[in-house]
Length: 290
Image (cartoon, rainbow, N blue to C red; front, side, top):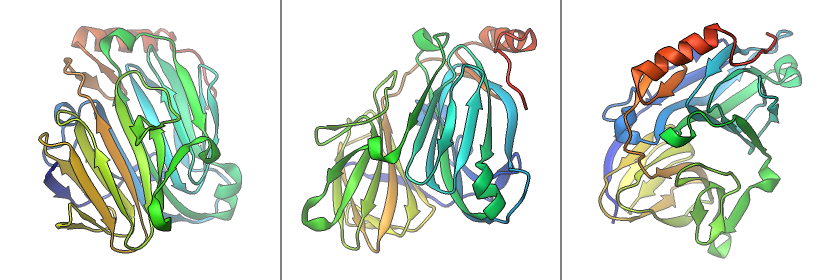
């Protein structure tokens, strides 16, 4: 059995831009720095929050990235994305946006226009997935994955289902392409629903309770908005819903490469960081209107 190492409560929220009110779990959570959570190097969680109507969409203006991927999972609300490599679109409830910044892009993220005008509850996860050194300077790309394109595994007796965003669950393959072994899935469980998971012992593994409350391994009760980090021993664990629940499951093989991080750039050396800054200042990341 893969035992629970930490159950982490959400830290005080802060705003990213004016559109994302987030709790940071990675890398600022206790014992959840970039090296420990490799290849997951950042996790911001916008827990359910009501935004009032506005004529000017809230969000984050144009900014650069290099060396990793940004993954946005939408639970409530809608967000629009545009980047300098031509990627973009709108994602809403159940959809996923997977942007590979790689050699460098500019991008911006805003609440979708109609959602902004009407207001409403907004809930999303943004995850940064590190790229192996050999792919850090590859061509950027964008995967917009609507919920109907996400492969699903039905649990027995109508107890729920697993949405396999990336990786694999019981021979159901994930819908996203990845550069290293990464498993990412939503477990949507009815009251009493139970799901079993099995990942290699050395993979860094955790889960985030998006809705409801769960019991892990029949022992540890975990409430809404809490993150569970598992030990790197054993392979199996179970999740049981104490009420109707939704849980984001993450497991990835560590890259075990040097990490040099500075703001929106994550490379392997600080010389590469300095090069990224120079390239950005020279306009090599392309152009994107505010």
